[in-house]
Image 1 (cartoon, helix red, strand yellow):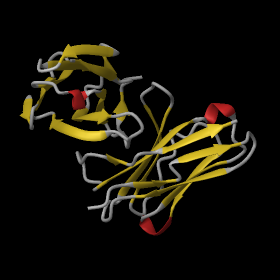
Image 2: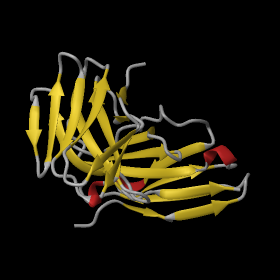
Image 3: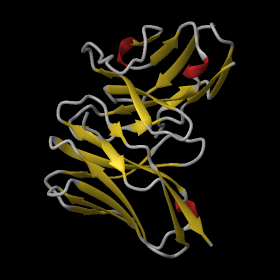
Image 4: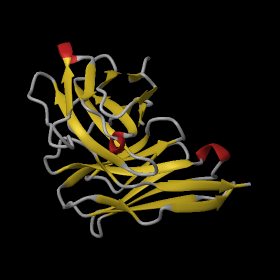
Length: 114
Length: 112
């Protein structure tokens, strides 16, 4: 079946511009996660959505970052007034949401801020 | 804070040999562990998981061992192949955390 889909796969933007990154989770998965991965680094947790509950935003690095999930499915991560340090791969993952269920990742969006 | 970390950043093995990638964790509340494989330009791919009520689990060519006494996790890959070259991450979920906590990863290099 289809996995987690992210778009665009690559995004180049100028410093100060806003960007939107999209994630289509696996159908039926109630949990959705956003992570950030800098070059050669591990994954940094950003935000977590579970069903209709309020999202866990504890990982968002600043108020320039926001995310929403419409209809319990598609999610959009928005970065306002992008900075060069925002350059990274942004990964989305989804899971069944049950305890101890693995996360399934998309291939990410590579964001480059010039 | 408590996190999951890896012992070695790079591991080089001969094709056909067995590989062992190690991981230490410090969160005593951890109850679920996952190993991921990440190839260049792709997202992490699920390999195998283990729950804290187990100490060993086997998959196809892979085995995960969990030692709760010393809070140590390992991934064994049998008869490594060129396609096994990737970065391997261990990740932990537990203690009320909503998201997996990842280590920095081990880069596995397969030499012909």
